[in-house]
Image 1 (cartoon, rainbow, N blue to C red):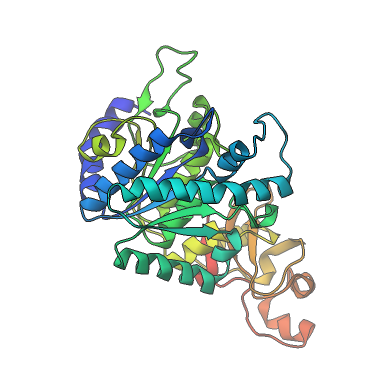
Image 2 (tube, one colour; image 1 turned 45 degrees about the horizontal axis):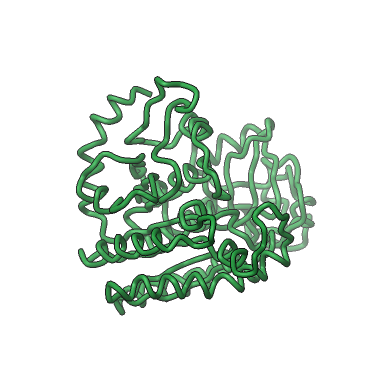
Amino acid sequence: MDNDIALEDGLYYRQTLFDKAKRVIVKVGSAILTGKDGLNHEVIDNLAKEISFLHNTGREVILVSSGAVAAGKRKVRFRDDQEVTTKEKQALAAIGQSRLMHDYDEAFSKHNKTIAQILLTHSDLADRKRYLNVRNTILTLFKFGVIPVINENDTVSTEELRFSDNDNLGALVANLIEADMFICLTDVDALYDRNPLSDPEAKALYTVPEVTEEIITMAGNSKSVLGTGGMQSKIRAAKMVSAGGGSSFIGPGRRKDILKHLFSGELVGTFFLPSAEKMQSRKRWIAYVLKPHGELLLDEGACLAITKKGRSLLPSGIIEIRGEFEIGDCLRCVNRQNNPIAVGLTNFDSGDLRKIKGVRSDRIAEILGYKESDEVMHRDNLVIL
């Protein structure tokens, strides 16, 4: 990628998107929020001032914040090098979350801002009704002029309930409320085309038109010290937001007045442009929120039909069923090389699907004794990856 071309082509568009952004997500991680003695109050105060500045311009702003576990560790003098079990992490989050919100409440109060705490697990978004309830709560808080502060509910989260990291959570929330912009503040200043520590010729990428595999590979050149997600996680989050029609920014979270610099047009950090084609809300929910419960191996004809011809998935194109699942579960579709090509909601459970795989749809009733659908996955519930 020619950085100069990308910079020239994207600079004007980038500033236009900043100017037009009315609904903004700001995500900050533990690498920024914590210091040797626990939560970094200077950073928290600056963050509250910056977000209040955005809020005063008439924008709706959400803060997605890590830091509860780190705050809990400092409270009970838990060593950073000490291994943490799941139970201990849950307990530390319970201790630290109140400390974190207390500090945020004090910091935002200095700017006459009211905040609200929202704690989420993956299951809150995986259930469609609860997903919409979360959206409605956030939109009502906006109506009240309140700034939501969102964090993963580590106190009750187990492996299957986790978002993996708050980069993923922030991107999901951005898509949930159809945010215009996702700002990820971290401990690196930008995405580089090469490792700046070992290559003096490395260049920062200021504008990225599209998140490709090349861009994701470049993310390995930037290392985060304390964050759980890492740079590649932030790039994937940017790709997710792009699919929803939003733009993203990754840049230095400890830099004073970073948000003012950004919105005034200063060239800092890396900016990701939105996708030219916006994915439908329901399909974003299927593609990015739901966790696949199983896998379908498809033949070449089925792969072509769903990826190039916009068709539904029929049982005749299925070679193998992997895993156990129920009707309505999300499944991953792979080709013969085991490369994921799509995800979607199944109209059959794993037991029945094993009986009808590879057969024509007109034989479903004969084999199962009933037929609710000709399609295993209807194209409206199918997302091409």
